[in-house]
Length: 260
Image 1: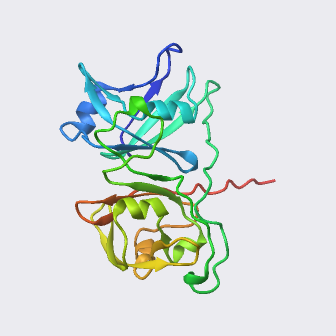
Image 2 (image 1 turned 45 degrees about the horizontal axis):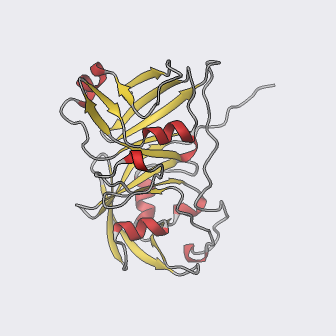
């Protein structure tokens, strides 16, 4: 089970620009591996935010970007939060209200329409959006902006997988631009266990603007990582390696069966 900690928002007058991490959690699970760059906080419904972990005095805090989490949900007095450490730069956040029940966030608008794919993937018509595409600038002062999109670091995007994604993965337009993907070729896609798959990068001209997608090899990656429709995935492009990383997978919850 992933290590976790909880926080209760007790002070309704606090500015909530930062959120402290328990010292024992930092000491036990982060130790000397505290990220100096961006950290992803994800939640239900395909939501994701970028923050930093900074040491202020004797404690570590979620800083740059945390106020966007507070604003977007929005978080209120006496919310109970659980943070699970997926990897050193990804936390999964679960939110509980004052009534003790989990707060399920409404799903974000999807990048792809959930359409039936009966022919070749080139014939699938789905409209992509850039709402779930992010890039972090490590030197950016978040106090000046509320935007979640920055430049000059490793970009990432969030996808809720549909049937059309079994055959190919389309990059959001801005993500391809920020990652420097501007020609056809090959790209390695890897997971956190160190496994790697070689995929083909193909130019897609289905829409008015040019988009790039992963085609040959992507289906092997799908199967090798046991992906399925409804899974929420965070993909991050590691610039230094020129590889795409599957940073996080939230499996679709099975529907509850009711016996009558």
